[in-house]
Length: 301
Image (tube, rainbow, N blue to C red; front, side):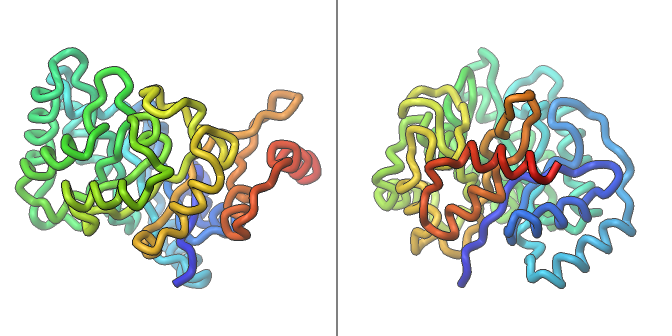
């Protein structure tokens, strides 16, 4: 099976899901992830079903499986703290409905921050909220993302994610998304990735792993800071990320890039994904990545 690789793409009012698919094709990708609106607020525009239909047709024409498309839940949803609990539950339910309307059946969620309540209370709050949100009929699967352990984040250890899954009634509606930067920053050794997978398999089970956010890190291992870096330019390194990308136990799992935009001398920012995906496909690092990205966008804009 060919590599399933993609990136974050923008979802705007004018082209919506169709724009996401067009950008994915432009990047040479066959998977993608997007927010249905700004991740920092509740502003949401009406979904145009005609644009969605065009997008799904374009995916089919270009052999992009709709199972390789993900929505990311907004950052403002926090299921771990009691404050604004009703808002968090209501807004996540709304995002799930938007997924359904778009024909997307996967949504990635940061488990939440307990904000001083303590880890156990935070995890219990997440479990209660998920049991209120998830019903037996829904088609959308919630992917809990592995976190870096920054601040009061819940879900930076496999044991914490297992505790959440164990408490959820409809466990078949829950999966896990690895984030390589987060795992590294949380203290996991990605250079011994096969051992890491064995540990995950023993604690949770590899059948629960369904997505990889492929990012380098600006931090030393165990820094608990969550600062993404471009592929091959951080402390994880190109060879380690390449080994993860092509690991034989992950061949059927989509890999999604969330690396930083590149800023040019005139302060304009551009996505690096077309170039990073090319590197990963060719299995060869581009030592002049930043300059090549800047030159490419100078010529095309």
